[in-house]
Structures are given as C-alpha cells and as structure tokens.
Length: 343
Image (tube, rainbow, N blue to C red; front, top):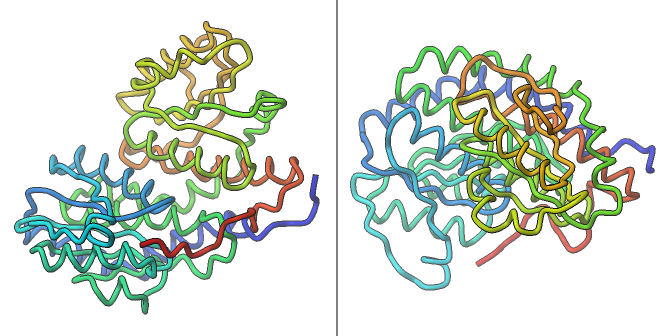
C-alpha cells in the first residue's frame, strides 16, 4: 500500500470547506438563479453533462422531480455536436454541469439549448470557461482548484449548487436549512469507516453498486470511481432494476455495495440487499434496516432530498484508501486526463 498522501485525499478533506464557501459566498447568485426559474416556471428541465457531472445531474433530476414535480431529462450532447440537430426547448430550462466548462460537446449543447428557447444555467468550477460564457446564468461552484483526475469536491459542490437553486426556486425553507447544515455533516461523513467492505472485494474482478432515487445517482458515481481509481469493474443499478436480469450473475461471494438513504425507498432497498445476500453475495448496505446484509455507517441530514449526498463523501474516503491499498495512484489513473474534450 502506498503511504504517501494523495491529492485526492486532500481534496476530499476540503469538501466541507468548499461546500461552506459555496453556500456562504454564492448565496446571492443561487437565490437569483432560483428566482429566475420561478419566473420561467419551466414545464421541463433538460440536463447536459458527462461523467461525474452527469451523475450530479442525475441527482438533481430526482431532486427536482420530487420537490418541484417538474420532469427532468438528460440530453445527449452528441445530438448537437455530432448530429447537428437543433431542439425545441421553449418554456423549458436547461442545466449544464461541467467542472472544467471546456468540453466542446457540452458547450455546444448548452449554446444550442439557449438558442432553442431554454433558460440555461451552467454549473462550473471554472467561471471564465466557454460554458459559463454561453449560458444565461453561470454559477461558480467555488470548489477551489481540483488537481486529482478523480473529481470529488467539484462533484459534491455541483450537487450542492443545484440543490440550493432548487430550494430557492421553490422557497423551501426546510431544504435551505438542511443545506446550510451540510458542511458539518460532511465533516462527520469523512470520519466514517467503510474499510470492512474492502475484504469483500479481494480476488473479485467486479461488483454491483445499488441505490434508488438520489442514492442511485450516488451509486453511479461510486461505480465510476471504482473503475477510475482502482481498476475494478463496477456496475451501478437501481435496486429495482437489478432484479430484472442483472441479479442472475450474483452468486456466492459476489460483492454488492448498497447505498441506502433514509428516505421512503430505504425499506425496499434494504429488502433487495437482503435478497441478494440470500443468493450468497457479500452485501454491505448503509442502512440499519437490513436483516442479513452487513450494515455500514452513514450520517443523516434531516432532509430526504439531501440525505444521499453524505454517502458519496464517506465512499470517496473508502475508495481512495482502496486504490492505495491496491498499489495505484488515485490522482493519476492510466489513460485518463482531468479535462476530457469530447465532441
């Protein structure tokens, strides 16, 4: 195991401060963005993103649909960048998420959404980037410089920014209050120990990561990080979808990480974790409701829309440790760059 501290670990430890900075210093801009959405009263919201940013957008999809009752759909950037098709988005809003703000396809799709009639918001950690220039409302994530290839604090701040805009759009005092508590919640999340799950991965080339609702977006992010930092094949599934076919390959010793937020889906997700344990899998779940699977610790925020987000902070700590245990440099995974310029 490498004993040298990684930039990824340092950036994970910066998450509470980054979130606090965004909530404090970005408040006026986030309130204004919420007011703009309230004035637009969109009939639909499109998201534009790739990679970790797309997982942040997926989290926001569930949050918007659950809080505002407005449908959210992801638009494939290649619709514009490769296929050259314009979309009609009158009466809609579009949210682009990009840490660098430089990927040509994300920039092109954002500009096309604006030209198609959408009110466009850009969540980016690079306020002078092309995506910020091409959007109606650019929002600085204020995560600070992120040098590790694996996005951590920029992912978290992308979700926090989107949730803040949603809370101010809907004038949801309970959600605003929960978001204000997040920096302290993240501090506690960093201190949690998930290393027990590492033993389940020994000698195993692949695993499932499960979730539902906002926690499914976190599962997708976790699966990506397993591949990116550890070279381990991980697939994310909805805890409902996994039973429609993927469960066929789950047998003795198959590792499963189940991310349960304490919301109305928790009991159903815990039941799936126990069912897969019954097939012989080594299942770990962030829930006290499991009866057969092993329970991992989690921290709650007091609000069901925000409760899944601390899970990713605890997971980041775990996966960084796992990467170093396996002898990898989590900051510089092979074949990958910090900025991926796809078209």
